[in-house]
Image 1: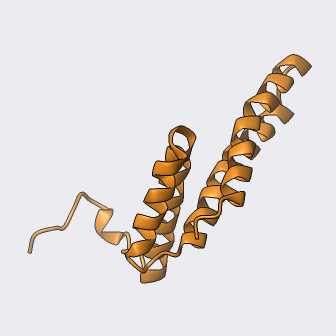
Image 2 (image 1 turned 180 degrees about the horizontal axis):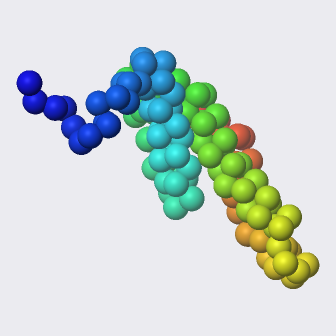
Length: 112
């Protein structure tokens, strides 16, 4: 019998249906977040396209996009906490602003 993959890879279990759905949702949210930065109308169309399959809902996709944008902003703020000096901390805080603003825009989007 042939092995299915490199040594040790056969021991990794396949994701469950729930885990696959969660991964799909995270992927959709991340994709929408990235696209929203450059073209909100195209991102809104993508949300509707992704929701048309019936597996994901518009609100779920937007919620995940909000989470993705907010997380990036929060990670920047976390990095600011350990900055070596106040000016670097301020710069990192300012870098978080666009991500937090994007999260707010996504949260207030009405695509219904």
